[in-house]
Length: 304
Image (tube, rainbow, N blue to C red; front, side):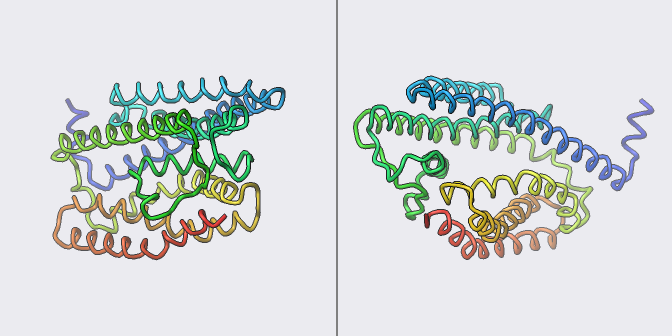
């Protein structure tokens, strides 16, 4: 009883400090889970790729098993509602990201091995990174409901050429779209149920709100740089210092603008007219900035 009274009498500054400490703990746990999980994932992928060096068809069941396993884990997460749970959120987020990585790599390399063994795909080359672009391209195209295709932002020229490979790619695209729709609907339901319980009183101003979210830049720095490096390697079909530096140059403004846009949209729930007007103004400015920076980023990824 006394403990609850003391907690309720804490000032917003003390509550904010506790929230920030919790946030740093979540970042630390997320980084640990991602690092350990990445070692396991990359070890499995390296093992399967080593099998392909012995005999190419040996890697087909390996990649297929990883693809099915990652899809099953994501389905369990969706069915259990783990995408809306705050308990063990660091672990759930790291597992989700690792499953996405496994799904993309498994799909792209399974397609490559099928093309080498059975045919059914038209591709300019059979390199590992070149086919990885094929997996990323289809993931983005499906997750964004064919928006990249409509605007001719295709990252890969690889296409299925017969009925079976087209069916295989179609099922993959359909699964991604169903999953994205299910996650969005789940998040919307969660937001609608908990919107009235949002505690925004502790954020005095829009800038105070953004400052409290600045800890997420630790995540962007620790994990964003490797992702941009990975995109640079994929775009150039191999490791290239120029490609990596160019990716950082054109990708960093996009990442920062998306971060600012996301939290500005969330800040529309803040109390106070000026806070909301400022958040709305920054959101519109971010959208305007993306009309210049995002096409340049896409043009770099699709120029190779």
